[in-house]
Length: 293
Figure 1 (cartoon, rainbow, N blue to C red):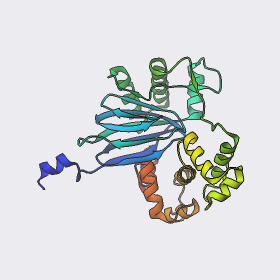
Figure 2: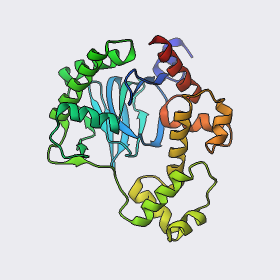
Figure 3: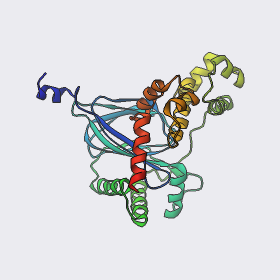
Figure 4: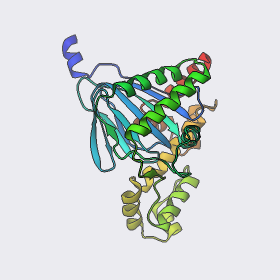
């Protein structure tokens, strides 16, 4: 294969991705140039504000498939299931901000947002495809400020300016977002049980007995109302707890077993599919960021 053929196919081009905590508590950053990677169904415990700067990406969210063109903003609520994948040979270049719910609430108070507590901004349209030069410039300045040592006053100001802009331009003022809750008490109990026993080897019979439903009805209803089957929901919490533990110094192999994975390779595969980086890359990215402060 010639170099030009390799470049066209994208099969040999190196993918670059990084996920790390910013210098502001409650905000993580993700930067990627992808050519082949496909994100499995997953969710974040934070608002996702993404910006596509090159190529073409796509994601499934709330029953629809969306295409992320250059210049488009992606706005996804916390706890809502979605995917992500490259949609063109040119790849997909994008950056994400992940803003935790407590951080969002703090900023809304600073903005004196009129919504009733604990309501949060609701973005009815997940993908804003129109070219938004103002929003693009604001996002770019903020991402750079959060990626390197920057005076706190500057970072705080850029954060509030971008949030105010996105709410004013893209949110539905007549609606407020609240964490999605299952329609039945039994499914809410199933979620709570899976969170509490995220690292345990739970059978579907055990889970069904805990909430008083038949195994098949539980699986079907859970998938319909939560967006994931029970085993995938448990895996989400395994990944979230493992991700938090990666900020410590526990060996990754030991950490994997402690959080319900068969071994480190098992954790690596699941972590990469959900977050786009391996556990080792995530830990190293945060060590680099800590050293730069």
